[in-house]
Length: 239
Image 1 (cartoon, rainbow, N blue to C red):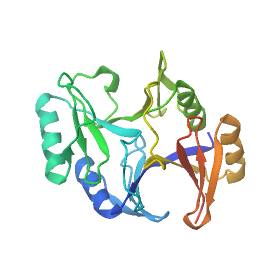
Image 2 (cartoon, rainbow, N blue to C red):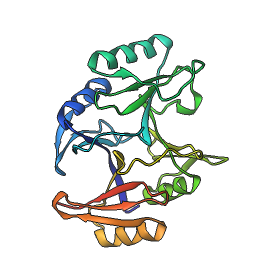
Image 3 (cartoon, one colour):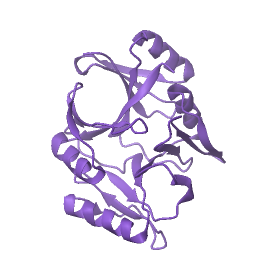
Image 4 (cartoon, rainbow, N blue to C red):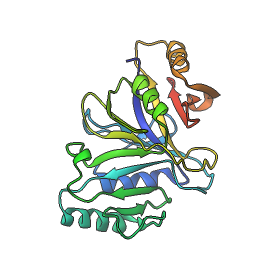
């Protein structure tokens, strides 16, 4: 493996305030980010960072990535929902029916997330952040498995999922139908090359796997690429 998942990055009009919300909900430490944002530091090697980057572009469509938070009991689910609402979340309507057993919420800037009911076998053992659920194709699941060196742990129909060899949060892609793309993806992956890897060699590897090059943001220390579904991600460079 020549790159690792540095963080899942959220655009935010108020990055520090949004980081404080997620810090309170997840129990993670807020630290300054070397790439002009605010970061929730991973607490263990089964976690990735969660980054909040300044951007004033308004959110206009449902995000194509969201967190699934797990519950050990119905009371635990209720307490997570109550804690999120106390911190500034709200209930969200994304067209879910009354028959669902998970609770759909949105953080203070409108980013959707789910609080999953207990007894979900697929997320068992994955931790509180059980999954990062993504809108995307089987092909893009294969791409990210190869890009990160994370094995496929689900490949049924057109649904895929990967997980770090260390365990922890799964990343899933649900297959069709796909959500509309509202322009710039407000939630995306930030990758970082391993210290002994030439960044250009890593760019070439990602391109060979099916990525496309979008732009270079030298001031922010990143190269912007897109995966085979056209979802943007960044390869961070040293500052």
